[in-house]
Image (cartoon, rainbow, N blue to C red; front, side, top):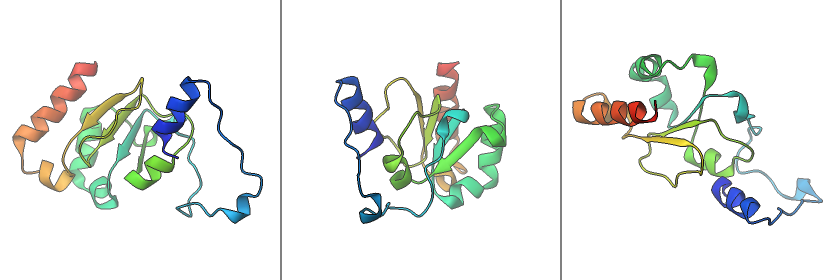
Length: 130
């Protein structure tokens, strides 16, 4: 179940079912669920985007320290459960905005690097929240 669907059901007062035999269900990814409540920013991007030099410059401009940022793929995000950080930035384009979170969207970093209009649009989105 996607995180947004789980939150929607929770707001309606519908509880999630419990898995009694978890070893019968393998998770979609081998990684453990991260506790995202301790982060300020969740970046939905590819590994290449996150390791790009421009990413570090943008995070610095937004005043996010490296230990306050968590990144994952769209599939990992959809499987994520629990609370999310205040800011969510998607380099995959628009996503359904989780209620109560500040959503930033942009093209992939490789495209953003050579497009001043897109950089300006990302900066305006960020400034609109502050």
